[in-house]
Image (cartoon, rainbow, N blue to C red; front, top):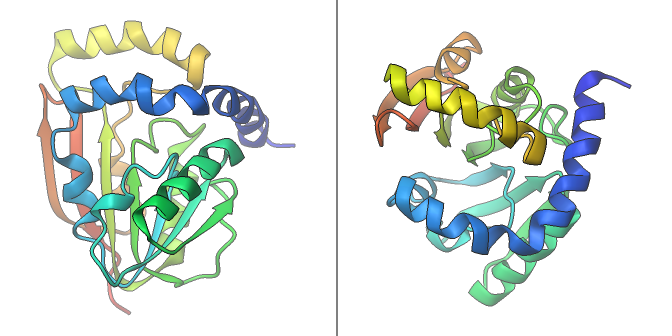
Amino acid sequence: MTDVTKENERLLALWQEYAPRYDRDAGRLEKMLLDDGRAWVAGQAKGEVLEVAIGTGLNLQFYPAGVSVTGLDLSPAMLDQARDRAAALGREIELREGQAHAMPFADDSFDTVVCTLGLCSVPDERPVIAEMYRVLRPGGRLLLLDHVGSHHRLVFWWQRMLEKNMLRQCGDYQTRRPLPLVQQAGFVIEHQERRKLGVVERVTARKPAA
């Protein structure tokens, strides 16, 4: 068993327990940090869409009509809530349980890959980004929204202090900066912006056409 798989087993137990409280506990923090980030991400999705770490399905209300959404998550309890949310919205969706570093999808399967607040909570973001690249069709787009390590020194120091506790509680990294890894994976960056003192990052990237 790999270190990533072992850590995912620990995270699965944590998220299974935390799932019923997630929307309530995260709601206030999301309003403070994300602004219209979920609408910004999901609103750009086109065609066949994969949402990695879909969680409780908070992005579902923002997807345009006509897109086909598949959601992947580690936690069955989170997926149950996403399923209920999809039903309440009248949206058909395919939900799959699985690990983001080894996605159960064929190469070149999707037109868009979406991930919000997901790369901060996987054991290693590098294989996850590689998997996102693999499952995207040539010319497909990657849409990311996440909290990242700030470029402001004092804020970054505070994030480093917070990270120790958050990793123990829910495996949530505060200081990651995935943008260089997205570029190294082969994506072409189309849009990148930092907000909230550099703590929140929005990225649009494209897999080069064949």
